[in-house]
Every structure is written in structure tokens, then in C-alpha cells.
Image (cartoon, protein in one colour):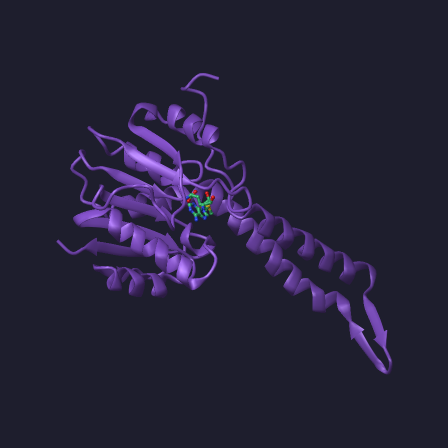
Length: 243
Ligand SMILES: C[S@@+](CC[C@H](N)C(=O)[O-])C[C@H]1O[C@@H](n2cnc3c(N)ncnc32)[C@H](O)[C@@H]1O
């Protein structure tokens, strides 16, 4: 496929969750349709209307997650990248890059240097999550020469202190088990930032905990309100390491 006709594919987040939303939603609809009434002792449950609204809510959530994965995540990436005052020569790290969403977006801002992406490649967290798919997206987006994709764990980054001007991360840290693990990832992000460096970290839960962890690791941090054009609704934590 030529670069001109190919389109990047940044994957579907939490594909198992989406599958379960559809399976349970459709199951409830069928239950209401084929078992409209249920007699339990003296009580009669009218299942039809009782199952319709929860079923519709679950199916709608699944659809909104797919719309985010196909469209919303590109707009959300742009919103995050706008929070950096790019000069073009920054060294950039994307933590939990997946199929390269933030890393590739950052690489397009660079005129020198590279954007590095690290991941543990969990296919539970992102469909088709594999280093080859990330490199393919970089090739399609015309930034293959400006990226460096590596295996790496957010809780033990393999980079020396003060390696990066900018650290980015979208929807990664909540996947790390345990509060201590997530705090460790926040400490690692501050450690690998240069003094005065900036981190832009987005997630749908626990962002208040991240703010506290970044601040106790030696940075100023604040978070935005939710972005209603994403699903799940995402907040962005804006971090500046002390100079
Ligand atoms: C929901 S996906 C988001 C991927 C990408 N940032 C995006 O927005 O499209 C979460 C990513 O975090 C990665 N991840 C989870 N735990 C990680 C860890 N401890 N270290 C590095 N990456 C991790 C997963 O493998 C997955 O690629």
C-alpha cells in the first residue's frame, strides 16, 4: 500500500471492555424481548421496559468508545500537543505509546531530534498493540526517521535523569496496578524530565492522585476540566519540573 493511500490506525482502547458492553447490552435487550415478564413468588417483574434503558446505556457507551478511538483521540492529541510551546528541537518521550498516537503527533512538531515511545504492548489495553504496527503508523505519517520505539515499563524508565524536554502520556497510567505503582510512574516521569521540562499527561480516572504524586516528586502540576468530546471523559495534567 502506498503512503498516499494508507491511513494510520491507532487502535481501539480497552477492546475487551467494549465487547462486554455490547454483549451485556444485547443480552439484556434479548431478555426483555423474549422474557417480557418474570414471576418470582407473588411478584411479577415486567422485564421489557426494565431492561431497555440499561441495555441502551451500555450499547451507547460502547459506541462512544469506538467513536473516541476512531476520531476523538486525534482531536484530543491535538489539544494535548497545543499545551506545549514547541521550538522543534525538543527531546520527547511518550509513555505507553501504544500504536504511536502521541509520539507521532510530537514527531510532526520536530525539526531536529527524535520522539521516543515506550510500551509493554498490552493487547488488553489497545487492539493490535505491537511495535510493528507503531512503526508502520510512523511510516504512513512520514515521521519514521524521527521516532524511536522501544520496549519499556512506565514504572522503571530506562533513561538517565534529565533526558527529556517533554514527556507525553495518554490513557496509560491508570492501567498500572496499585497506587504505589502509579505514583512510581509519576516519579519516573519527573525524574527523566530536564529541569524546567514539561509533561502533559491525560487519563480518565485518578488524575487528582497524579497531581499530588508529580508535586511531591519535584514539579508543579495542575489538571484541566474534563474533555466532553472524548469517551471516557479525559482530563489532562499539566506538569512543569522545577528548574
Ligand atoms: C489505552 S492504551 C493507550 C495507547 C496510546 N497512548 C493512545 O492513546 O492511543 C494504554 C497503553 O498503555 C500501555 N501500558 C500499560 N501499562 C504500561 C506500563 N506499565 N508501562 C508502559 N506502558 C504501559 C499499554 O500497553 C497500552 O499501549
